[in-house]
Amino acid sequence: MMIILGSIVVLVTIYFLIKRHDARLVLLVSGIIMACLAGTPMASLDAFAKNMINGGLIQAVCSVMGFAMVMRYTECDKHLINFMAAGLSKFRPILIPGVVFATYAVNVALPSAAGTAAAAGAIFVPLMMSAGVHPAMSAAAVKCGTYGSMLNPGLSHNPFVAKIAGVSVMDVIGFHYKANIASLVIAAILITALAYYKKEHKGYKAEGLEAEASFKVNYLYALMPLFPIIILILGTTGIVPFFKMDVPQAMIIGAIASFAVTRKNPVKMSNAFFDGMGKAYGEILGIIIAAGVFVSGMTAMGLVKAFTTAMLNNPAIVKLCAAAGPFILGLVTGSGDAAAFAFNEAVTPHAAEFGMSPVQMGSMAMLGGTLGRTMSPIAGATIIIAGIAGVNPMEVARRNVLPMVGAVIVGMTILLM
Image (spheres, helix red, strand yellow):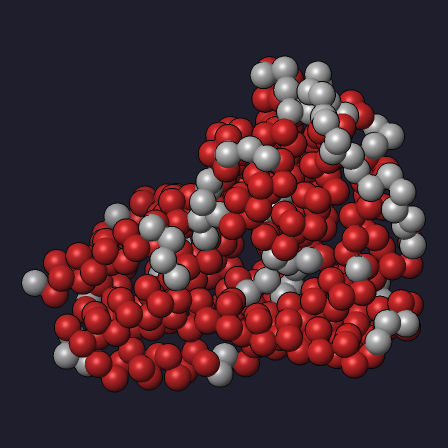
């Protein structure tokens, strides 16, 4: 009976997520309801309190978002994007895949799909349209690259999986980066092929929509968004042992370097950093906390045990669930976060029982949820980029179906090797 009731609550939860109700509220309420039905209401509240002080996640996520807000305040992000746009405009035959790769690189440095869509889209969409690319295809190319954040140590999923697996954040990224890059290459090839097949790679006449040709790029400014990532990579790989440090330290150094280069108001820069930290806790960690409450409710109802037992009895479906489950939920809800966090909290700790490592299973759930969200017509980034291009979000999503399906197949194949 408990399994049936719990399953009904989960289905209702998915329904409300699809209807785009606030994910934090939906997951929180669902978790509390399930815990109450199971007769252990405090289980959900204990999970809430426990997840509020998740040290590793708080440090990485909040510091990265604080740095991202500093980049926005100093406008260093604009310099990086315009620098990339200037280079791409000289190579029009590879404009579409070039924009995909450039957007991906921006998203590595600025780990917010919606923020990247807004910042990169404002530059790359006019650039592509002025080169004759169809508006919907221009938007789809930018959207196609909005999952570079998976290579950022501060992306909440990376420290989340690292904590479950008992390894460092860079170990997690070191495991899945090849699959990410390979999936990106496939996505770029497929969306370019689709543009040529649909004859949307040239011929469009843009009216009054042009790239910021007059924007003067400061190369030091353009380097600043990448500075902390460079420090972390050099330190972790041992190329420069002195740079071996954790994410928060790198982000603070990056913010200080940005101040030294831009000479912006230090008070406003400090406010931007701490505003970003607060926003990260409320919007990103809020989902993680709510997902923890949701999983505690499922655990109290016996759903997690039943799901795990079913997979133990049918190990062949585990790998499919890890990939397809978060991908489908990311597609229908517009957010890969809730699905990936819930799956990783409930199932990934038991990865060894299915013949997989926690890092492997967690990476599959991360990539699946992220690619599903990248393909979703109701994702915030899709809506933003469609608005910039002046097209329907569904038109953007339709053009990303083939690239994202190809990306998930290639990415998952590599992660399973």
